Length: 406
Image (cartoon, rainbow, N blue to C red; front, side, top):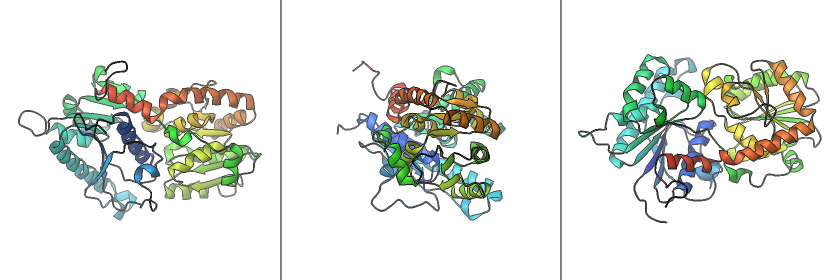
């Protein structure tokens, strides 16, 4: 491999790796795609050394675990932080969580100041620490980009944004809603780009047949099947999906997701519903198998909070597209950015289990509509691979040449 022309490009993420959160998959896949798309750049992934952290299966590295495509791998570095969040009850975790964020971000900024290069941070705190190290009398001469997944709330964090903004080389909004609210806070449009999340094409290149996927999962070959994969946090609306299945006794719902605590709560809610099966968290490389088995996928987000209605860019949407799986989804601004009603998805009123049931029934009963939605979604999926996203971002940051230029 050619030696780096400069470097490194460091992705900074306050993430536990591995974990049951979609954040972990996103940062691993983003960093791996950067490495594949910019082989002359030394790419690194810096994450938090959290306590506890689950172990990887024997003989499996982090990138294989998350199903990254073959190719160059980033160097992975776990940074120390002060972490005792999980030692206290949930109700008392606010202060230790902030302390963990601050100590990780400070450590990341110190390490970046000594290495130079380009910092691509998911954390406002890390970007803020680096901004303080810039200038003639400071020791950081690199560039800083911030990938924004939710807009800062509260006076303190908005003040941090105002302090940090002049030092940022650019901001990457994960959705149009994030970009709109950042512009309202004074972010210049020319320093802002919208890039949604994506999917790993290699994981969907050789899907099992519907019959084979059902055989592996123990699902009857002819039963109408609805599948949900992903986080089970309250705002994801999976409780509404369980309630909707009470009026769809002819169909089965299969749920694969975590965290484990939320999966247990969902099991209790589904008690007595023979057509609901909660499998809990499954390894990322198995998700495609669930999607291949399904007739319909579902994204039942609630209308509150803002991260659900305006900011989210759900991985499950892009993975369903890649699998050719038609979706029933909540009619929210965050999802209307990605899905078009009647063209590549069926949108229904949020927060309404009856509307959700009606949408599912509509697709389950209409094979021609399912096939039409599937074909449109599959055709659009190519623009949402991690590689395509990384290539666009690398060009925007000036780390690889524009298309057609040497």
